[in-house]
Image (cartoon, rainbow, N blue to C red; front, side, top):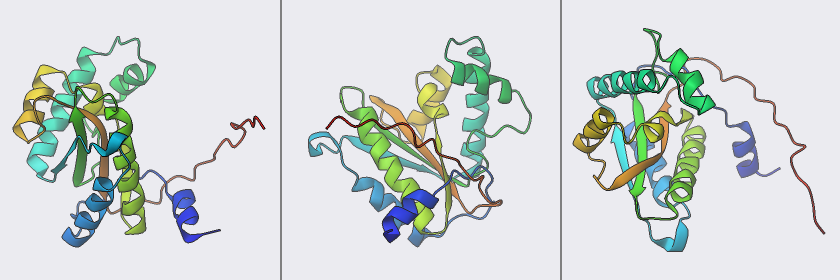
Length: 191
């Protein structure tokens, strides 16, 4: 097995992070892998917003909690389930990670979700290679159009006509990640 294959297969979502900020050199290396992700037509119609200000992260967390409360009756089972969890005083949508990377794209980009997801996958793998924990985050995508969330996103530099398509919380792990079991019976061959 190649080192790269082992890197992919050993990466797990980290949902408990230390407060210590990641090193700048590691952050830049991680972000560069996102910028080099594949994207439709090599248009590179994305924007990376790196949020490390803890007060702003707390403000965003409170706005996300409010957005969940407004959507507690959603037909989306993921949002509905997360809305129950978000009622807790201890709730933190980014699991206490000191860095949140929001990847957004122009709303006119038909490849926006795929492009940004590829960028975040590179970020997750690069973080793992650097010994830094990470987890894919959906809440900013779900509530990008909530007026209060949107106002803060715009304030921190997400372009107005861009939709947050994917996010990654990154930071040093404060607990070993759960061992994930993969369902490998999901492939059929047509030969």
